[in-house]
Length: 328
Picture 1 (tube, rainbow, N blue to C red):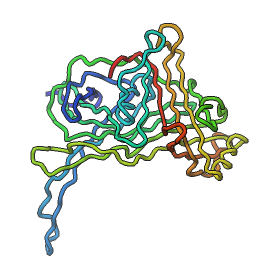
Picture 2 (picture 1 turned 60 degrees about the horizontal axis):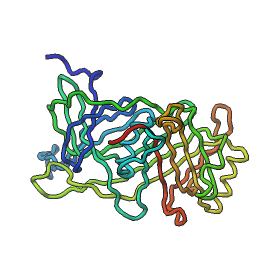
Picture 3 (picture 1 turned 60 degrees about the vertical axis):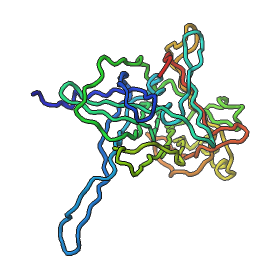
Picture 4 (picture 1 turned 30 degrees about the vertical axis):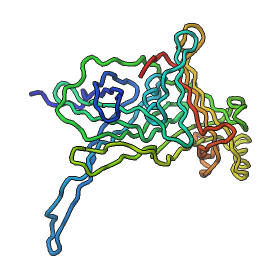
């Protein structure tokens, strides 16, 4: 029997109609990877007077998968639909382009997408259902657009046969030279004032969901999820010049600002003018400030913003992602 080579451990996903009901994993990503790890919470007992434990029994078992890769105008559609909100059907732009809008509700439960995830190859493979993105970070700088995060999953099933002939979304990476950052005083002005000395920007959402565990012998893992209070932040590393230090007054005033990260590809998504694009808007307030630092010879400062709900805008954040994907 051939050895199980690390090199050939591919990953495929399928969108579940019902969370936790496994489906064929018919999609293969090439820009963003998912690496599963088995997790367990054992119950251990050592009786008094004995050096060693006598009982170690399994309790909860689940999967925690790391997400890591390169920003993609296509593949981020699936991850946004899981961590933010199921966008439903996309709107059509420029005949053949598709715009997906992700805007989580400020005070109601969001319906999100879950996935069945297969990992392995011809020698051996495993699978988990109820794949749910709980944490997602995107970092933009002039060197890279990096994606990282965490996916929760139910108890793993080993020794499966992977779904044959999965399809792959078009490869359209977000290039570092396609990114602009704007910061404006009102939501109506979003996208007006470009920040020209941003060294790095990072948007993150964490602790989005928690699993529900019940006492039921018919359930091998968690049975559902609930929303928890997310940690949603934006960090801007800026040159400590006039624009960078202008954030000091905003911090002291507790002002709400409106921040846009806009990425526009040179590749057409529509038939004539619409391009692959990502526009991520957030209402933000400064919550922390980092030390002054040297960044490749530039005197810099890092501002951390918390994403907040704005009553006038009636939302905290919204994302538009334009590509050619017609369905998840």
